[in-house]
Amino acid sequence: MSTASSEGRPGSVRGGPRLIHLNGPSGIGKSTVARLYADRHPGVLDLDTDHVVSLIGGWRDDFFATLPVARRLAVAMAETHLRSGFSVVMPQLATHPNEVSGFEAAARAAGAPYVEIALTAAKPHAFDRYSSRSSDSGPAGDIDEIITRAGGLELIDRVHDHLAVYLRQRPKCTVVDTESLGVEETYDAVVEILSRL
View 1 (tube, helix red, strand yellow):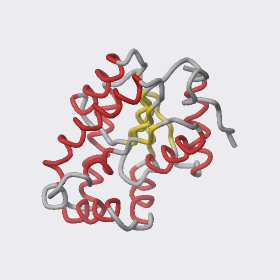
View 2 (spheres, one colour):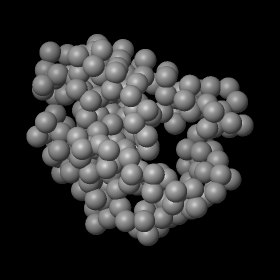
View 3 (cartoon, one colour):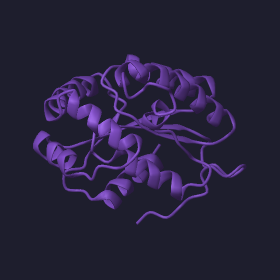
View 4 (cartoon, rainbow, N blue to C red):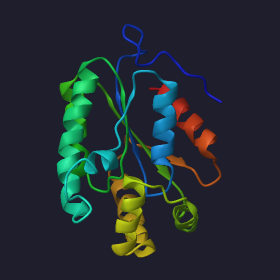
C-alpha cells in the first residue's frame, strides 16, 4: 500500500500543486480513489462535482442542466485551491474536451499542471461494477436514481462508447484498466502514475 506523502502541506509539496482529474464511467471507483488520495495527502482538495451539484437548488429536478453550472463553480474552486499551493483531485466523468477545458484553463491560470487519468474496464465488468455498487444515501444515491430514470445501463452503455471516442482524442491521458484491480490496487496505480510526472 502506498504511504501518505507530504503533498499539500505548505512549503513541502513535491513538484508543486497539480489538478488531478480522475475520469471514467459511473461506478468505476473514481470517487473512492479520490477520497483515499485526499485522505492520505493532507491539504489536497477532493473536488467532486457531483457534490457541488447538490448545493444548487432544484438540481434533482434537472440534474443535466445544473451540471454545467456546477462545473463552472468547481473550476473557480479548483483555481483558488491551486493558487493557495495545494493540489486538487477531481473525480469527474468527461466525454468531450469542452467538459474539461475550464479545468485545464484553471490549472494554467494557477501555474499548475493538469493531469488526466482514466479508470476504465471492459463494458461487462463496468456494468457489473455499476450494478453491484451499494446505493449511498444523500446526493450519490439521488444521482443513481437520476441515472436509472435516464436509462440506467443503456445510458451507461452510451457513456462508455462516448468515453472511448473521447480518450482517443486525449493522448496525454493515462488509462488504467481496473478490471483486475481492487480499490487499493487502483489507488496504488494512480499514485505510481503521479510519481512519474
